[in-house]
Each structure stands twice: as structure tokens, then as C-alpha cells.
Image 1: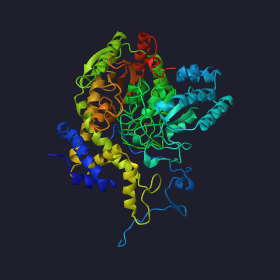
Image 2: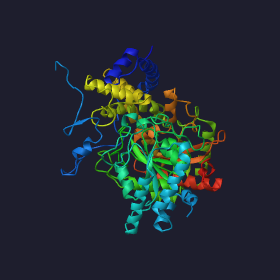
Image 3: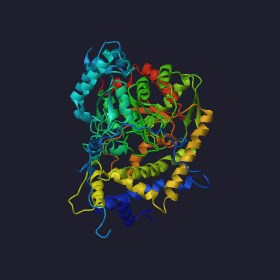
Image 4: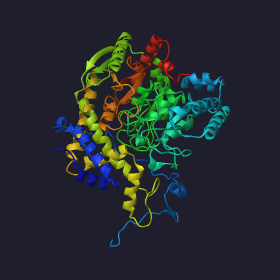
Length: 99
Length: 500
């Protein structure tokens, strides 16, 4: 049995915001199937009540003094923008007609 | 001083010569820029070069030195900078089409510290797109070549950096290591590469791949040079909340000490055997015997969970990548495709990402999205995090009995360009030995340990130490380097095709 179907791959592409071509979906279905079957090995090893590690070293939240520091100017922040209008990022339509 | 003499100097010697007034930053930069012009058409290590801008940096460094400023041991030394660190005065692309031509509005902390140290940034080096790969073939701008054999890969993801240093196109280079991306390219190019303790070097301004793993580190021709660069850009950074607030381990002192008498060395049983190239095993075995002859106490150590490290990594790293790369949304910077007034923001986003990301990046985003999706999270990402705990426990148990662990850095020497591009799993195997250290966050270094007899290509010895004990990896690396240089009658790189 395959670990992942082509329909699931198409669903993942939508979740990932990737407008993939049909042939890319076919290729990815086969490759992801192989990779997922291989990495499923973790399930054999990780059993019982082993605590998860999300981060290698112990971390605590870090605070810094609330001081004014120089930041980017509007021109600097907008310098790499694909489209700019009135010192703002201009973006395509976000809401549909009925929203 | 002649150009060849300048190129042949180690970074430590070059910095010393600048300090002593025997040469200048401009003279050193000129020698390297000329060398790049001569050989980079074949090697293709650099993505961005600007001769006049580099010389302007060098002139400024010479002026600062003339004004009496003490810039430290690497002042006036050129450096090749991986194109994953932001630079205000140069484009930064992470070798992705989605960032083609992007000029960042700020410097990464590593970049800023190179400048503070008076180093001259020669250019930005090629890499696997967003640091995802082991061969630099995943660059959107073409593959880099291995200077030992131009038909082979220079390793990856920091392959432009390793190729530049191996071809004498830079005395030093920066890299980043998420699963082996410094140590593996260093090993297959006959260089020294170090992955510092996680948090030992700042991620501020480093374009993120997997935030719990990404670690900037040095690539160099000698252990001392790597230590000097490590010291120059490491240390606490308030701008990176995962930066460790502790002194930089004494790596330079350790590289100078180069003594392993009485040191307890553990050979990791799981990192060897079937699947490892015979010449790699042979050179590794000889370095273990060498360490013994230098007075180290060698024992075999078992780390059984390492067998599952690759699987855990290829769940954790893609999961973090799928989240990190969500920022490339075609709205604030980078590529935007299909914005013709008829499409929604979401459609433009999806078209841009499909057009701007290469196949490996897409594969990892999809894999990460899968591993994090509801219904699969516990079975994949959750289990991988448990394996991470087991790997940490294996390291902790091992370091109760030994001071460092050793293994080959890679299972094979540099493979031919194109050999593994069609088979992602075979490419992932290149990081088999390096990944456990990233998952546990401790320190490791790769040092050349000879050429494999069957193909004449470099082999790397990996030395692993506990977190914040980076100095031990340099101590062992320098001892191996000194003994092998003596045995071989000079450094390995002097026998490469691009020796000067």
C-alpha cells in the first residue's frame, strides 16, 4: 500500500500554496511515497513515554530592555516590494466579492 | 609579495603579514580577485562578485589600520560569504529564483562581525537553494564544481564556499550547517569545516531553513584558520533569541595547543560498516590509529538511536522549512508572478511559489506540510521529536565516558555531478554521519584525513564534542592535521588540481 495518494499530494499542494503542474504532482506523489515510507522508521524507535525534544538546548524566554532603537525607514522597508502605492505594499485582492 | 605567495598563505599568516605591514588588504584582495577572474569560470563558486566594491572595502580596512585601529588577527583577510547571509551592499538570493536580485535592507550579524573584524567580503557564494541539499546542484543558478575533479560535486549546501576555498579563490569562507552543510562540503573538498554548538553563532539575518538546527560556521584550509573565523563571528547576539549567552569556547587556543595526550576518544559503532566506501573506512581507521599513537585513549562506543537520525531529520527539517518558507508570499519582497488584476492574492501567492521555488524546496515544503497535518502529526513529527530525545541521550551517555566522538564525515567521497539528482533518498544519505550532531545541538568539526586510494579524492574525519565544548574538536582536529601534514610532507590541498 502506498503511504500517500495523488489526491493527498494535490491537497498538500493547496495547503502549501504551490500551484503545481499535473506532471509535478505525479512525480511528487512517487517521491513523497518513497521518502515517507523511509522516514516512517521513527515510529519503530519512538515508543512509550519518551518526552519530545523540540529544541537542542534548554531555552527560556528572553526579554530585552524596552528601548527605542533605530529601525528601517519606510523607503528601506519598501525597497524590495513587488508593488508599492502611497508608501504601502500594494497587494492583489484579498477578499472575494461576497466577503 | 607575489600573488602566488599571498594565495599560498594561511589566513592566520596573511592577517599577520597585514599586521606587520608586509602586505595590505588591497594587495591581498587584488590577488584573490585576480585568481577568481582566472578560475571561477570553471569552478563557478560565486554567485555575486563586484571587484570595485571589494577593493573599496579593502581600502577602507587599510585606512582603519593606518589610523591605528586594532581590528584583530583577520584584519585585511578576504572572505567568501555564503549567499544565505544578508548583506546591505550585495544582493542576497539563497540561490533561489524567488529572491533573484533582492537587496536586503540590513546586514546579518555574521556579516556585521566580518566587517568589524576588518575582513574583506570578496563576494557571495553559491549553495543549494535555501540550503536544502548536499551537492549545490539544487541552486537555481547552476551547479558549482569540485576543484579536485570538475565533474564532481563540491558538497552542499555550502558548496560554493567550499569550492572557493579549495580553489584558492578565498582563504576563508562562511557556511551554515543544518544537517551537515558545512562539514560535508569541507570533507569532500579536503578542507576544515566546523559546526559550532547550536546558538553559539547568531542566526540573525541568516535566511531560515530549519530554525532549531541552522548554525553558521567557518570553512578554511587549516584548523587554526577555521578557529580564527569561528571566534571572529561567534558569540552572544541579543538579536537572536536562541543565541547562547556564554563566552565563545577557546577554539583558537585549542587549535594552537593541538595535543590529544590522555584524551578519551570514542569511535561510534553505528557510523561505519555497510554502505561506506572502502577508502573512506581505511583513511578513517588510520586516523583512529594515529590518534592512539599521539596518546589518545580510543574505545568503541554505541549510539543505537543514530540509526534513526536520518529519518527524524527528514521529518523535523522539512516541517520547520514548510513553516519558515511561508514568508515567501509575493507580497513584501521577492518575486511576484501573475498579478494581472484578475487574480486574488492567494492565487498570485501560489503561482509565485510554484514558479520561484525549485524541485527540492517544493518537495520539502510538501513533506513538512504532510508531517505537520492533523492526523499525521503524532505519527511523524511527534515521533521524530521523540527520536531527537533518544539521540541526545545517546550523546549524553557517550560523553560520560569519552571526551570526543569520531566518525567519517561522509559515507563516500565526492560523487559525480548528476548521479543522485533523480533520487532524493540517495542524496539524503550524504548527511548520514553529520545529522545526529544537528539534532542534539552539540559541536562538531571535519578535518581532512587523506585521499581515498580508489579515487584519489579527499576524506574527512568528523570530531564531535558536547555542547559548548567546541574547543575539543579544534584540539583533536589540529593534532590530526599536524601529524598528517608531517606524514604526507605538506598539506593535502597542495596536491589538488587547483594548487597554487
